[in-house]
Amino acid sequence: MSVTFFPLCNAAVVFDRRLDDLVLDFGTTGRLRNSDLVMYDRQTESWWQQFLGEAIVGDLTGKVLKMVPSRLESFARFRDRAPNGKVLVPNDPGKRRYGANPYVKYDSSPQPFLYRGPGPQGIAPLARVVTVESVSGGQEAWSLDALRKKGRVETDAGLIITREPGQNSALDSGRISEGFDVGNIVVQRKTGSGIEDVIYGVDFAFAFHAFYPDTPIHIR
Image 1: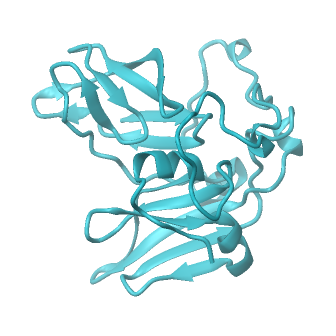
Image 2: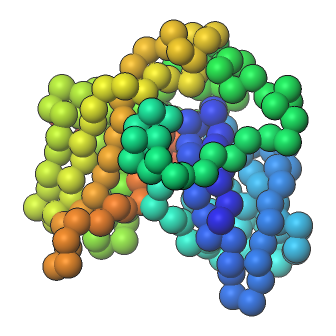
């Protein structure tokens, strides 16, 4: 697996590194597209759009990595849900101050950093949206502010989106422990064999609109 996070879009995505007969590992190109991370694989040096998992330059152009369901939740919830779960930490703990935020007040910025494209309608560019792949294979998005008021959304297609308080923004206060409460989001779908986790993101609205400009965002 390859676990990725890019703060400018608030995009956290987990990919299966296996593609055809290759097992890829990734680095960062230092480039941005729509204010989102462009990765590269060390096997072919193709460039990949992190938000989509799609190769956009090189021998693998057009290939798409398989995304893997994962949860965005506080460490406390993870510990309670998986008491024997493993946590990845750097070999040198001094390499990263995980409780600190280098993007202070980015959440409340009027415009995203280095993004010059059109913004979404009816919602602030840096408002969060819950993005989910629909049963038809497209994408859907729900405003997190609307979900915060409702607490739970169920769709006719069997999708269940829930929010519970208890997870701070990593992009608000200089100390993450003092940031505002984004909440813990869980997205699942009812199936014939029960309820299963599905792939989702809690992304900034501008990023979703940049990559899916023809897809409306549910804001109520």
